[in-house]
Length: 319
Image 1 (cartoon, helix red, strand yellow):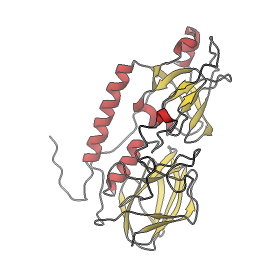
Image 2 (cartoon, one colour):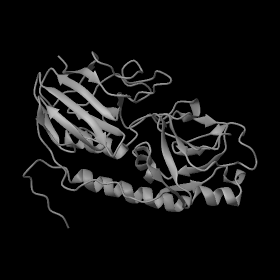
Image 3 (spheres, one colour):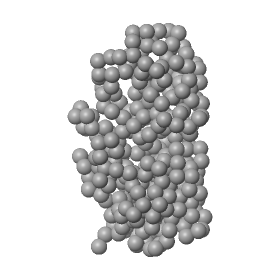
Image 4 (spheres, one colour):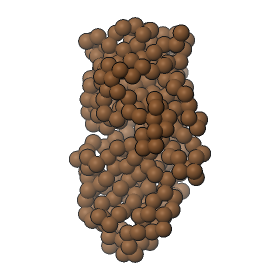
């Protein structure tokens, strides 16, 4: 009989997410998957799962869960209060959740998106090769919807209850959010571009898995705010007639009719998404080649952190 996990109290935008759904954007199917891919991968590593295994993603606070068999759990994404049957447990580490014990995950501090990984992973049926939930189309996850209290999730088999810890810390680098100009950067004059890359913008509360709306100086498209709909990607920064930039996220639509002034460099996608509402930041333009180099360096850094995950007391040798 399969192990199951029960949601006793759900947090906001609690969904099942994995490494994403690739190869279908040409057919209008968003990539989905974890918004913060690094935090998702680290959570999985801490419980002994494949880095792409399905986890529970939540926004702001995680709620309460219970398992019907002993499992290993880990919570990442940001700092937060975690309790197992009332006993404090730190995030970014693995812990054993015994049968019948209640895991409570409180509010995130300094971050928006959190991840709960469970040993064995969540084994809902894949849709188009992924277990990720896309809410607006009702695709994947559990019936394509948010998780709510009373939901029962089937878990994969757990080979052994082994605790793991990070040998190296994971941190988000500070600084401006880097962007690659275009593809419609020529719709905006030099003055608007100077404003875009020098003035501060603020993350608003108008945000979800599809997009986040920014506040700040109004951006005017000299050639107009309507284009023939063309392809978008995760990180596309659309500028509608309101002049307020909209940054597309994991569940963002695959085409759009607003000019895109720039695209967030992949290396900074999660960092932008994790900025709390109300926080200010600036954009900085870089070349596509520089963005690719930064992404490769960040992947290497994450790989090194994942390789540092080990059982407590295990020896690690570094060259």
